[in-house]
Length: 196
Image (cartoon, rainbow, N blue to C red):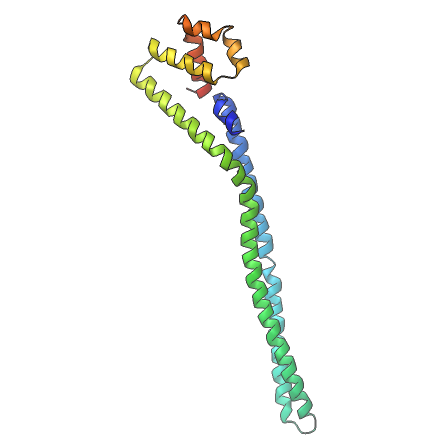
């Protein structure tokens, strides 16, 4: 795909640009949505922490009953056990909240960047090179104008870069055209390929 982005004419390049932009935006949206949905699970962790705190309140009530004669000893020990369980639930809920938040960011970023990053890694260098190529040709045209030498240069570029079927649709013998100075059609084809 990257090599085609370099060789293709301007219309095809714009089409590929649109496809790549759609692909990247699509995966960014999917990644953000994935992260958002996972983040919503922090509500479960918050509920767990709240439950642990409620259980801790019940443990405190049981501990206060330890001063009551006859039932006090048993309720005090039960209050300690319930309190320890409540503390464990609160700790676990806080750890789950932290883990879910981290996972939502990490997984959202992975879903967003893995497919789009791979495409951009191959496509962007070719597009940057093509943009640089167009810039250099434009500068050459601005400095030298539509001269015979500039047309010859563009014709040679066309022979080197155009797809063979496209090249043969322009001329049946491109090398003969170059040798005999018939550069107009080939130079125009190169300018068309670059979108100039």
